[in-house]
Length: 178
Image (tube, rainbow, N blue to C red; front, side, top):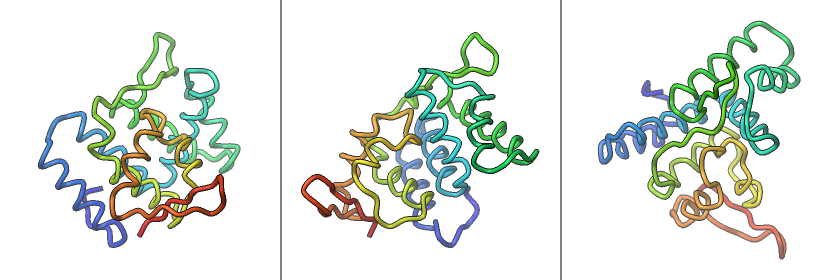
C-alpha cells in the first residue's frame, strides 16, 4: 500500500507521518490494517464478516468466513483464495488470534490506543466503503472495526476537522468526510 495511489495519497502520507512519530510494531500493524481496508474493499468485507461472527459467537472459523463471503460473491476459486489470503494477513497483523482448534480465531488485540489513529482509521473506512456520509450509529457498530472499541474510535475521530457531524433527524446523526 506504500505505492502511490492517486485517490489515497493524503491517507498514505498521513500513515507514513504517524509511523515516523511512533515506529512501534503495533502502530505499524494498525496502520497496515486500515490502509489494507482502504485500498482493498474486499478486505473490509472479510473484516466485516469476521466482526459479525465475533459478535454472534465469539470466534470465527475460516470455513464460516469463506461461506459468508462466497454467498455474496459466488463460489469461485479466486474468491476462496482471496479470503484465505486476507484471513492470513489479518492473523499475521495480530487482528485475528488463532485458537487451539485449527482454522478458528478469536479477536486479536492491536495493542495501541485507538485515539492516536482514530481519524486515520475512520477515513480509511469511509474510503473503503466509497461514501462521503455515513450515519454515526452505523459507524459505531461497524463490524470491520472488530478489534477496536468502535464507539471510542468514532468519538475520538469526529473531533478531527476532516469530519463534519450533522443531524438528519432527532435520533440520527450523520458523519461526513470533508
